Image (tube, rainbow over all chains, first blue to last red; front, side):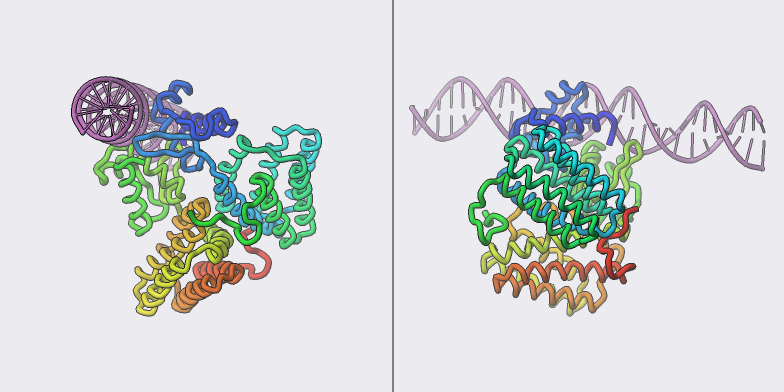
Length: 221
Length: 221
DNA sequence: TTCTTAGGCATTGCATACATGTTGCCTTCC
DNA sequence: GGAAGGCAACATGTATGCAATGCCTAAGAA
């Protein structure tokens, strides 16, 4: 919104996603204001905005904390992403230009190389870039916005868990296969692979499903 | 967040959704503060929150306006809802209790009666209630949150367009059919009907599709 | 010893004052 | 007469002071 509060939002998001502030940690306004060299007002605004993004939880008269993600939430996030990003892949297969697809392919290739070299930071970065690029190709601001808030949240898993090697290989192959589906202009194929890709990521991140057969989401509480 | 700013958010959302503030209309902070009997601080916070909900658009140093929804956005919103609420219906078919389903059925029946009597206000209210109830049955806070922001936005169509009679009958029948699918504990059926339901609503609201065959979302800009 | 309660301390919420940026109009010059 | 630049009024952004709420601690009674 404003220069100062924009800086505050970026700085805080950066630090939270880097794990500098642990999940559940309290975020006092005066403390943050001093650290950032601002007054409380823009800091307050930044906290509200991060709350809207889902990175911070605010309780009236009690203050802000970094959100804690229960496994359950991650489960749900990836399932919704499977559907919505599947739709994005389907749409992209119909509307993306050849140049767009080439660009996505470049990212997928780079992702693969970093994965093989074991450079995890780059792997995470390019994975995020791949997904956001593909979502943009759907040309739907609403979709982009919906997914990006879900992603912001789920990126916190970096602080919780890392892919194992097999999962990473699978992920790389999915990315390449989606590019192939786009090149073939096959919406069904693209959607199906993206759907599988995110469900497979969910499985890797969350470990074995408690009830394998008939429970896509958890039971109600 | 706080008592005063909560009141401000509710009051503003109410007025925007009632069409009291027209899309594109400027929302000056001092003006709103005077009307609501508050200072600018909670009003500012309320505007930021409504911006996060997608009802208000804020530009730095220029102020807040009620968002204007291009047809395109509505199109995208309903398509995403078709996927995500389809997932909700699928999950509910597996996890909802019989009592939950009965409750949903009551809403669907009341919806039908209001529709037959032509009480549009009640029809809109119960339609919203039906969807939010069903989404809650999925037991997924993430899903609920994702959809509710999309719905908040799309509810603005009330100010733009109303269902015709045929579309309303179709909508009523879909609601009842989804209840039947839940009773049958048939996730595929439930998901398919909900998907069709929202795509049919999209068609009614937006009129004939410009390109019927191969363009689920609009072209990129 | 433990539960309750009262009081002090810290932090958040709201209001007001000040700073900065934008907009529209007026003046002036071409 | 038209256009460009500057100035003034207004709206938003930021800082700070004050009020209210919540929490922690300590003291007293059961």
